[in-house]
Amino acid sequence: DVKVTQSSRYLVKRTGEKVFLECVQDMDHENMFWYRQDPGLGLRLIYFSYDVKMKEKGDIPEGYSVSREKKERFSLILESASTNQTSMYLCASSLQQGASETQYFGPGTRLLVL
Amino acid sequence: GNSVTQMEGPVTLSEEAFLTINCTYTATGYPSLFWYVQYPGEGLQLLLKATKADDKGSNKGFEATYRKETTSFHLEKGSVQVSDSAVYFCALSVQGAQKLVFGQGTRLTINP
Image (cartoon, rainbow over all chains, first blue to last red; front, side, top):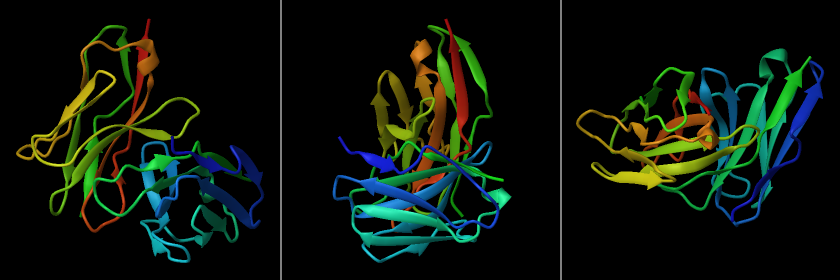
């Protein structure tokens, strides 16, 4: 079974702090994704990566950056956390590019910014 | 642009009731369609998918048929169980777009 793990289930940070969310997948997947999940809005894509050191902006990249130095690891960075970034963050991976590819999700990190 | 519209929730049913969660989409090209489920405290997992018109995806007693003429992918189950309580997301992916577009999610609660 594919396993996608996220470094924390819950995080509490202060406004202005730099926040790192880590994601690791163990199945040699090419693609990795970061989403945020908010009630009534579903999941919205922040960034994705289709190869090491490659990244593409999603629908809501403002205020976020990402890093993919190794194939199995994809980090989401909040350079200066703000209260409107309080949300559930979900990481996902997929084996390769293609519209029919299944994405495999981690358990999520619930971030509260005070 | 590409978008997915799901039935408003929350939905509350009794055990053994029939379930339908409506999903319609707008897409350029020919999308693949998915239903993902999120159980309490967990991430999303694929429930079923269909990659072309008239395909039926099925899993765990759930079914959905890709209807190109009505741009729909409604989720159905004949007899729900308490363990089906979760949030259900309809999603699409278009070739070349490399990403999923999700509906807003429908929270389902099944009472014994």
